[in-house]
Length: 330
Image (cartoon, rainbow, N blue to C red; front, side):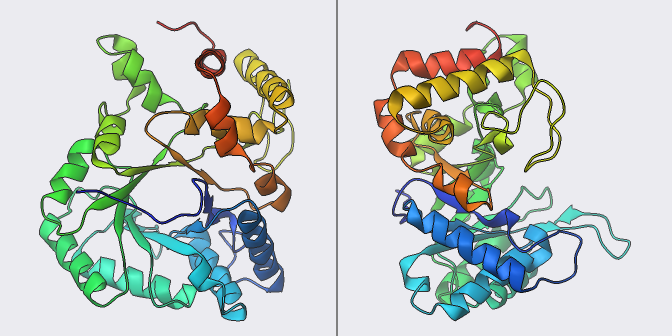
């Protein structure tokens, strides 16, 4: 089966930072304006796919996005929306847990649609593997949502190749995406490919063969955390600093990587952010990075990443990786 997501470019905008503080019960005009500015900035660099989850800022991320959609009726047909379900946060004395039962999927998707003020999701992602998952229940829920026109495609998040295959056996629709944490900083997905038959490969902990499975089956790999939370692009110093992500201290490898990204950006007439994303996109699995910043200037700095990827040499790619890993290739 061939999977496909319609997206104007390969970058995706991640809406996890919208809606204000996770602990505040509601949002106001400022949060709606922040969402509008982020959406405009993302569209300004060619992004058409917007990524949500029902838990992001406890539902407020979807709600403020819905406010923007309601105020701009012609926007919805110009973009694609995906959201995730399956995580229940700890509350009311109950522990956080996963729930991909039929009823939970139906309830969560309908709640997301109400908050987003839309009739359908272009893509629904199952947020995390649920050990109590019954594939037939998932298939029944997805089949019903698709028959009702509420969901147009199905994907997963944080799943290995065997987990995807186990689920796919029960589905009548192909899994079209797998969203994983992938970046130059969080590179276990890559380390495992060169550390086969070495103890370090087992220590990396990434399920071997997952990237290859997705590439073979045409399952889009969506990389969250792709900008490494600003670690290489302005949120580092030799000591603690205050920034978008709080205090970070740099290691020698991180300082060297940040300097190399700046150097390559200058050579290519681009930005460190675009080079960082371009490094991911240079991989033959055609990874689609999720850009999660809520700051318009940082979103704009990601422009041109696909062009950087197309022009990145093998030596540049390996130099970035070996610099970030702080060691030569094994």
